[in-house]
Length: 85
Image 1 (cartoon, rainbow, N blue to C red):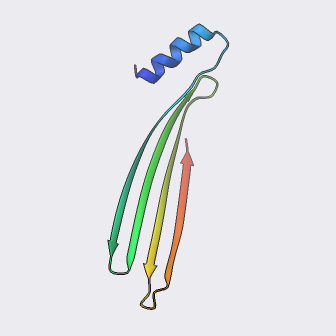
Image 2: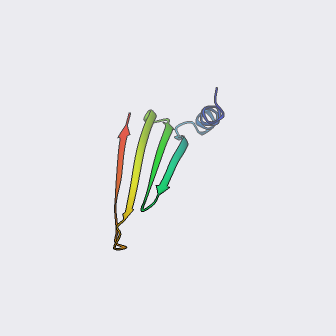
């Protein structure tokens, strides 16, 4: 049994009616650049254990793009999308 679940189990047993919340997450990223552009992509995933709600998961992806024109103007956009299970 993972350590966080053991800890929650022990705390719930000791606390009686008390609740326990634990979370674990992972994050990965990718960065690329070249003449006049750069992009970054970050993916994050988090699992949460809550004695009241059970096991939940949320995953988010963020993308950031920047581009420099010959005139020196910098344009870009950021996008973040999340989903929960």
